[in-house]
Picture 1: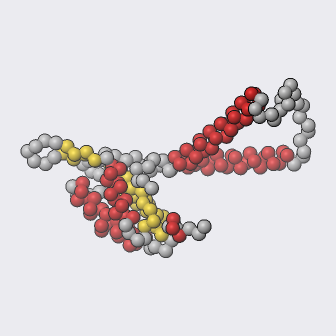
Picture 2: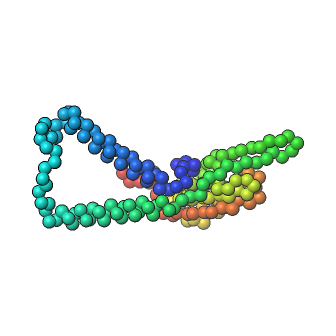
Picture 3: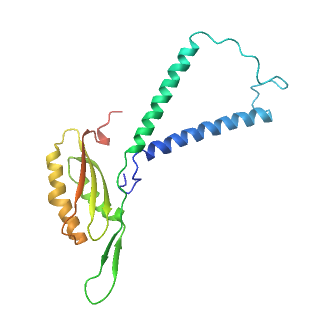
Length: 195
């Protein structure tokens, strides 16, 4: 999982919902085109498409109401998911030291990928998402750690503080890198799933 993925966690849900809506609309368009061209004989030629509806059964209104509540709750869940956002990534830029002028520019994703690789090397860390959220001269970091179901957070956080952050500070030549950290525990490793 790339650390440079979208800063909006619901982006995957949004893409999935849009893809599902697109598939449904394509299927509906295909059915209509098939009926119109006569290749899908769901309606007899010359027969009316709409007829006077029969009275629905009494239970139908309860089913429609329940479906409406479910759709409403799913919509509410989707709206609430839009509010949670990760900070945007930044590009790191460093002026050259010495007589020769110059500038080194590193995309924040490259820096984040290096820190992520450092963090996921720890045995208790299942996955990590890292973003450089502020550029030069004062870089800042946003880190989400997903820990193994049996791992304690202490060693993983210590690995971040004593190994990953000092390496990042040396690489960016920055004395401080303020870090926001979110730790999730109890996540199973992908290889631990039972088929």
